[in-house]
Length: 282
Image 1 (spheres, rainbow, N blue to C red):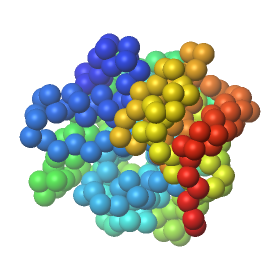
Image 2: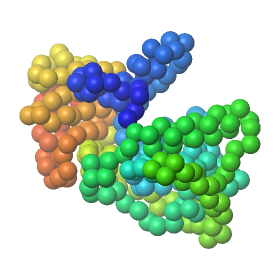
Image 3: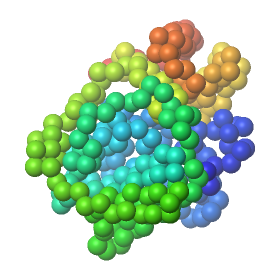
Image 4: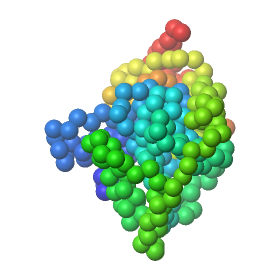
């Protein structure tokens, strides 16, 4: 359903950010694209968006979206929110300096679902296309300095309808009014957590470390390995694992946090044994 990814990307187990950069450069070689292979979390979200003019959200769960909302409030960044599920989509441009924030619209304390909604309900490709087209339009208008609609767009591709709902600022909003950062404040508190709606588990090191990923090829410890700029991709017994240079490991296809921790400890011990990990001084 996403036009910028191909079957060959999947067969190569290519991270989406790398594949996306490659295809965008094929469309326009003069475009400057910086890609980051990581999961958005309280530990890195502010660094990721600190120098951008506009944040365009494409997260697949409410917790990440609420986290982005708080980071944009803290850094005073405008952003576009979009989400899709089955035949439906929703889009909203948010500038908390002038309008309501996402938590004004969705006041509940949401957490990641333990089941992958995409696998249960699925997403119709036309819902993605129409929703992202509206998002791109709002983003372009903002970047061109044109007035941007502030309503919440609700897209129903099954009925071919688009509703515009006016959402007012919550005078008692915990995020944009009281500056209570419930999601951003979890920084450093969760070493092991679900990512990407439970398709992936990310595990963080107990202490700050530096993984010299390029030395992994020299060590010869892993057979199925590909090394990129700041991370390495390995496959162990059919499990895809990304080892980032900051010591974080992303494990795809595991839904048991205990199993994920055991895999992490196993890999971390191997990396330490071969001198690939360097502990950083705080």
